[in-house]
Image (cartoon, rainbow, N blue to C red; front, side, top):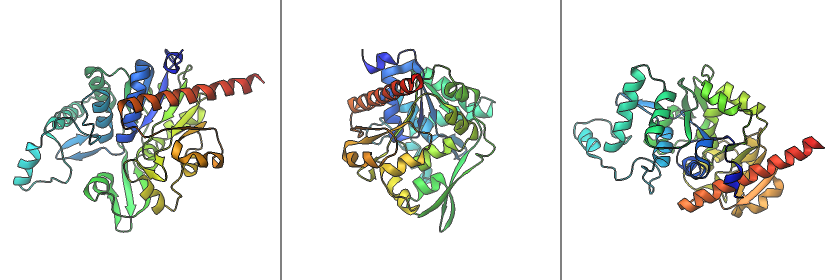
Length: 326
């Protein structure tokens, strides 16, 4: 029996950011489909050109819906940029690029939200329309804004990430509004499901993509109470991220860029998956470690790593049951 077959009918939850997380989310969706719930970071959301933009949600939606630009890892395939060119001709803001095809999602979302639809309702409706088997959920319907504190002052996330290309030195991160944000009933129901088989933290940036999710108190409390194995995939390979500023941020925060630090960052973990390159770090990590190839270059790589996550979670579950019986 395959690992995916063993999980059939057993709910699994994934916590996910954008590009790197979406790759693993795609593999999980292909393996276990309707049994998967993906809770997506919305700390990156912002209003731009009068539109509500949800970058991580859209990356996951486009990736699982088969619409994404595989080379870039974000946005839609076969994109054109006529709108941005025309906007630039008029002297408008072009630092954050919205493609012609991508605009449709932002326009629809903005109209829906202004009409009283929640972000959760809109996201799940789009996922269904695009034939995505998994359930996609924003971490909250309340606004949480990731703020990057730098030596030059606070920066909204997209100004730091896109506008300044992550160049400013990070002193700390704040999640504005997280203290008031509440998890939706859908998110809490997924994490509190009595038959929950596993929680998987995708290889997204722990500080920019996963921490905003954990900053919502209801979600963190629910994770602390989860009885099923919680497994994370380290976003680092040989001390570097495949994509994004994870290692840079860790250095600026005074943290070693290694899997030991990643393991310590998530105190509720049951186990950590690290890349084969970092095999020698396994003995330094004070929890079960599974070594696998974590670089997802192809669709087969995404499926393979998803299967490794489920296999590791199943092994941890068996160990837990044995310890309980003893």
